[in-house]
Amino acid sequence: MNIYHPQTPLEAVMLRKENADTAVYFAGGTDNLRLGGAAEGKDLIDINSLGMDKIEIRGDKLYIGSRCTLQDLVECDLIPDFIREAAGFCASLARRNAATIGGNLGLRRDDSYLAAALTAADAVLDCMTPHGENKKEIGTYLQSKCKALIMAVIIDKNRTGWVKRFGNTAASHAAVIAAQSSDIYALSIHGSGIVYGNSPDIADSVTYCDDITGGAAYKKYLAEIAFTLRR
Ligand SMILES: Cc1cc2nc3c(=O)[nH]c(=O)nc-3n(C[C@H](O)[C@H](O)[C@H](O)COP(=O)(O)OP(=O)(O)OC[C@H]3O[C@@H](n4cnc5c(N)ncnc54)[C@H](O)[C@@H]3O)c2cc1C
Image (cartoon, rainbow, N blue to C red):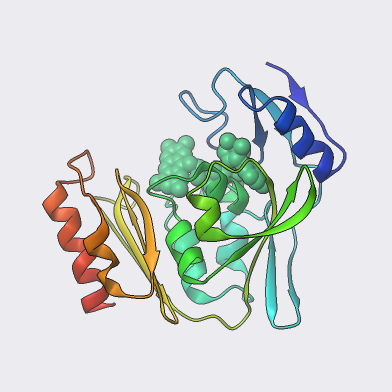
């Protein structure tokens, strides 16, 4: 295994482009360094000396550096409460202390701790691409195979909303995570992916499946009642 140490975000993204099928970004390493993780058999592009670790307000926006850990989010008063709550869905303190917001989104997991809440928050991703810096809408990013480097996650600083997780235990994979903020509804459904839109009826557009987190009918029920009951 090779470990690259780029000096700039652009250098990192060019390395990823040149090694598209053989290298991944290395942030907190909680997925990359486990057996069966995204990095198995691949080289690592270490992004940990590129900064991207600040949480700051710019005008009416909040910029969250992609290397901020889930625990950084939980502990920061600037972060909207429902995003902090979503970061806390990672039940292990040790993992929260290492896992980053950029890595969580980069994995595009269908039980992602943060994807539903940040999608409902209408987050925009400040990315480095081979063509330079670019802003990407989070929903589009999550449903693409984009290999850009996320540098920061941008949300409205006063964003409010709610998020709800359904899982057998705090430490098992979530069956369903539902979030709403303003007029955006978002659902992460294990085995089915993430859906979002401007109506709670998004639950109807999902093809549900049976898996280790629960049956298709159970997940459909949860997705439908999450928006009816709210919290
Ligand atoms: C036991 C266990 C259980 C887990 N359960 C869950 C779970 O229920 N839900 C969940 O969401 N996650 C889960 N994870 C996965 C992981 O811990 C988190 O998703 C974490 O947030 C990943 O962040 P990281 O910084 O450790 O990423 P890394 O492991 O360093 O990287 C993971 C991937 O993200 C990409 N990446 C990293 N940084 C960026 C960036 N800035 N821009 C673009 N792409 C990037 C990399 O290319 C890499 O492929 C689990 C992990 C373990 C070990």
